[in-house]
Amino acid sequence: MKVHELQGEIMRLKKEKDVCILAHAYQSEPILEIADHVGDSYGLSVQASGDAHSNMVMCGVRFMAETCKVLSPGKRVYLANPAAGCPMAEQLSPGSLRELKEQYPGYVVVAYINTTAALKTECDVCVTSSSAVQICRAMPEKKILFIPDPNLGHYVAGQIPEKTFAFWQGGCPRHACMTRRDVEAARALHPDALLLVHPECRGEVVREADYIGSTTGIMSYAKRSDAGEFIIGTEISIVEHLQYQCPDKRFYPLSANLTCPDMRATTLMDVYHCLRGTGGEEILLPEETMEGAGRCIRRMIELGG
Image (tube, rainbow, N blue to C red; front, side, top):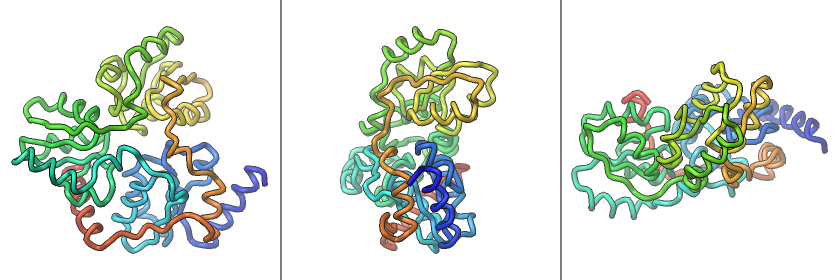
């Protein structure tokens, strides 16, 4: 079956079965073309909660599908590829976090949304990469235990010097592998290009950037900018998407190592089998997990996330 034929069959099936397809921006271009909503993990969940369809298929990783389920408890949510996980989201268990909290009495726990639903039940509030500074600044508490990504945490702490931060040494293995040497090599090849990076990158990379922001923020900046060349310091698929969306501009990856195997695990055929009922996995969460994770996410919304 050709790609366009498979896409056509998926479009037919999703209409027949009342399905909304959600695709994270790190998915492949063929998947983005058949999606109803494209965005970051939290944005997709918000879009899903306001969508009229009764069934949701997440083309992303497991924690994203869980967040979608928490915000849309009355809908059936499926993960297109059940093997698509997230190393950062799975680094810290609820039990380990309880032990960590004992080491930091008096601290509130701020969790990056890239965490499991079970872990969120042990946290006070969630943040996204684009809302983390705003939310941490708005919180009345002065002591913050930021998990699981210390790179994003240190970036946030640098914007709010009046508060005290503690960190856990986790993080995204893809973003964390970039160094200043990668920046120097990329700029040597593309001296006129602006460097746009995600705050999950190391501080030595973030400090060299012309723009720091979320995935959607990076894409919006590149589209609006008058510049003609950009080095992209986040998952390599963003380079491809921007090439399609801005054919008059040039985009280069900061490194070929910025390829996330979990994000690349989902294929069009996975979506097809999920829609046919011969693949995918329905996300089912215990009631206490739904309640605990929901409390954490609602607190984020209250503080302006």
